[in-house]
Image 1 (cartoon, rainbow, N blue to C red):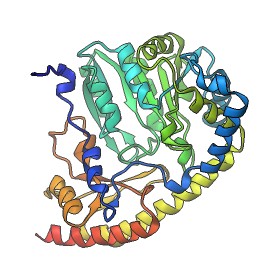
Image 2 (cartoon, one colour):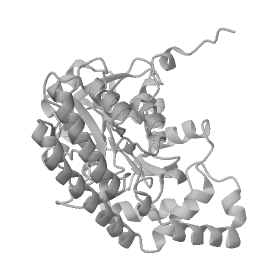
Image 3 (cartoon, helix red, strand yellow):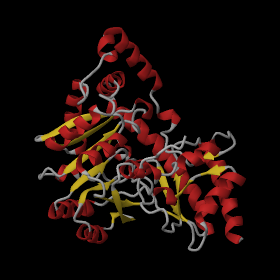
Image 4 (cartoon, helix red, strand yellow):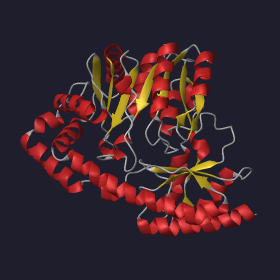
Length: 398
């Protein structure tokens, strides 16, 4: 039988990250390609204890259907958490629990966009969001990322050129893949431009709680007095990605429509996982975050030291980071970046992700690649970066 594939899905290729991860099944491969939290960051014992307690004391609530909007105690906690930790007041807004933050991207695009409408976004950007938008037949317009965030002049040009833009998508803290943090001035400009052109903002903040250096910058949502920002949060990077618990807060009419869309996708987010998340948050969450920051501070500092030792002498630059999970490295002009990435994993067993995987338009040349420092052990990082340095020296000579 000849199978008909929908037009939007026919244009989406398998994730380059997933393809490279196939090589990572080889235990000899050093995995700088994943975006996974550090294994030592998982609070396994506490989750086991909380889960056992829930099944002992509230088994029916955990195993029964729940409300699409989410587990009420968790939603109530998040209202307080957002105000205390992120300066977000939710009066006039609504809040929904989602199956991870990536579901928010699809729900919002499904709620706001017709086929052919435009989403303006950072370029490069998170591949999961790129493909969520593409799968709905949305047209993507990229805005270059600078060391302090999205280029605001190019953003205004994109807004002027695309009157059917429905929202601007941004990851302002430790952006995936570049690790860049948007400055306070640019956040204010972003908000002002969105207001001026009548466009919403989707602020995706999965890494904001993982700041281990520098000063915290207020969220874009904390500026929102006009009901134009949807804020996406996640517990994937600060608790465990496997539980798939995220949340969105935004204008009530928009979140209500996202709720209807979610009913057609998965009815509600896993109740057991929501209850585990709620109970965990009640018991020393700030202390848990400090432990995570210490883990990632150590890993990031080691990775940057190794970049200085092995990559910078070869003419490879990188953007220093103050949080998150990733470094963005750039090869000298004229170097074949895709071949560099492919040969490194094939011949030297060091895996990282080509920058084109995160491009709004993958046909545009890119000299950069993403390195993840959260997944490898310190020993693997030391070994892998030494191998990568040797490989880069040989490759760039040729």
